Length: 213
Image 1 (tube, one colour):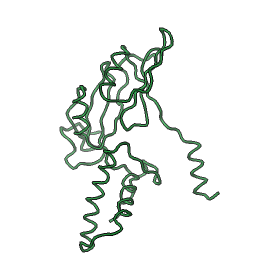
Image 2 (cartoon, rainbow, N blue to C red):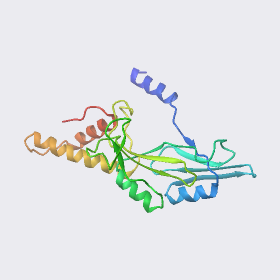
Image 3 (cartoon, rainbow, N blue to C red):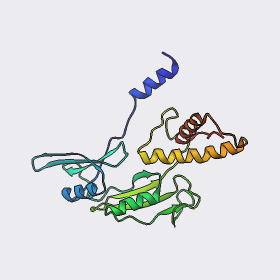
Image 4 (cartoon, rainbow, N blue to C red):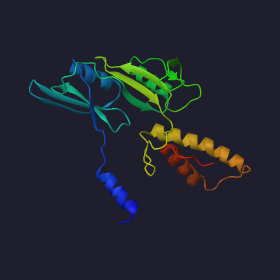
């Protein structure tokens, strides 16, 4: 077995994939109605007597789900805070959630990590810098964070996935814009190998490595 294949096998066998986050709620049916209203996928609603119930929802495009119910956690309802939902367009995400009944804050950004919140989306459109918040009926707090390109080392360099059709389309648009500049730098000649260039750009963008020129 080559070193690459061996490393891939070892990484696969030791993978730890976050599956579920448990939310403490006071009224299970109210929470179920709220998350169903957001358009999240209902995966399960299991009941065992009067003391146990587990409801599972999965946000669109997410590999991680949420659980809430009875007999799951001793934590007080509403105690879960800072639950991050990653989006590629903060304003589009806000509009979608508001249309589904969530009370979403205005977008805000931070000029520096840990700095004060400033109104509006990041004016430079920097990845990781634009946010909005909302809560469920129990007060469990969610944070929307706009990420369009990952920092180096944040994703596997040889694995490229997209959470939704919208995410893939947005990546294709960014690649198309960058490729237009690439053709200009090369005398305006049509690049017949544009599919390879797009692929290299999109993989590099996801991995946070140097983008092709």
